[in-house]
Image (tube, rainbow, N blue to C red; front, side, top):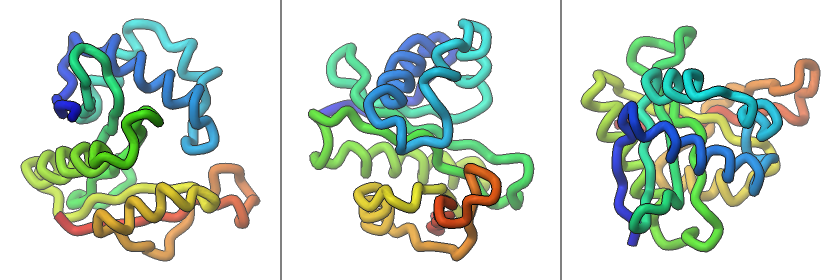
Length: 161
């Protein structure tokens, strides 16, 4: 079983490695692209690690999953957003996603949050089922990743911590 660690400033190469792997393996699961994030320099990756709480699932020295959480500027003070959740296909369905989510819930609570939110694509049924099993519920709010594409809007889900 993988260990869950909180990424520190010097862990940015691991965050970059697993994040880029997630974007290349499951590009439709994210609101970002490998083409964009692969151009980020070292300073940008360090900034990303410092601006959010990143948690890594590691098997030995190899990252096999990750998740980030942060307070978005346009969100209520009591909300933290779960972002970038991904687990390497070979390590799925063994509880790692749940362990990563629990790390986010604990961090969010310590950070003063009452609610954790996330967005999930409208066709990503496996992710929605996972999030529902973790206690997330559809809020009814939607995020149009592509402006004017209501059918492609992502679902906002929330869970109390």
